Length: 472
Image (cartoon, rainbow, N blue to C red; front, side, top):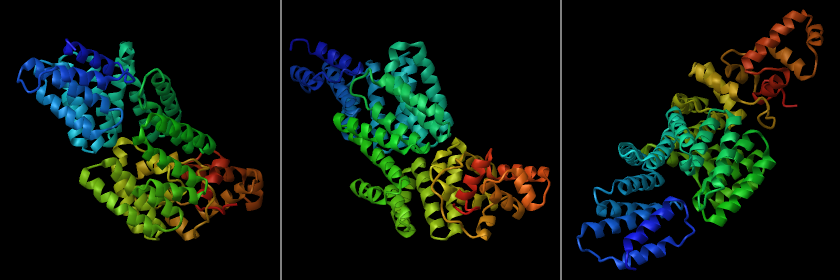
């Protein structure tokens, strides 16, 4: 190989344009072999630095953090200070390795450094790459509004410069995740389908895996379980074919959620055993009526999340811990932990992390309301719960229901709701209770307002979910 610099440039172009099916490593090894080693020559060192940088980039799609870290550090040690584009790229890959390893502070610092350097050098592509991952770190830190603003800036950038559309699927998925947490489900589907369409034109990217999992979560939220199962099966096939094994954990988590929604505790338990995680184990234990086992699984996870400053993990674990303590009849501790979860979620407006837990969470939120906990945000959460959220559950004692309402239904309103549940018209309810039709309509409006619903069907379903009515 007479001109190793040309082969390094060729390998760089192949990598940057996503043509990873080419045997790039063979090209790099040949170029490396043709270069003198340890000469101290700036040009040779820079080429060796570029080779290391390209190897770091090649490891990114597979999430091979140690390889990315080793090669990035080698590249930064060898690259010439004037090779600004490659140094920015390597700072970005270094940030990616930190992100995969869970060191979010270091990742954020690297991405901010890369973005600032890219802007100074007017390198639009590297600006977009750094900001895309910075948005992901902002998501993980529950800074959803900041992340949405970051992603919106990138969408505008891509719209003005079609040649960098390759980065857009990741950005669209970020917006999809954010809007999912904001309970704006129509937008989620739109972003996912756009991301899938764009990613289909690219080689060796894992975006279809992320999109498939998010769409499955969306279908689960919409109670379309068969479609969710189909999406998960197709996504798993894609993951295994492309060897994107780093997505199997999240895929399994959603499969467990679907199994539990179907009441298939056996499948859920088997999946949790195949790919154990504290949250998976806790969910299965709660479904099996064993809150003590759930709490035992969750406490180490919470300690780790606090030690590593993982805000998103702290939130998810606190939500499950609150439910577990409530299931263990320790409502004081449950509300105490729920308060922590609400404080983490409220600034970013996260809703689905609570809503996805169904009626048990709704009842716990009502309990929090009666204690004056974050009334504005809690009312927003309760309004987001679907009226027909889950299979009917046994009714708690009337005293417990009343204690769980900041504005409890009066005895008369419960009577009216019961008659509505029996299918009586407003006039028939008025006749039964010896009231005027106008009075019954006022009671109905009050019931709707207190339950956060819009019609009779929703009021009945939510009344049953909250234990205000008998389940049948």
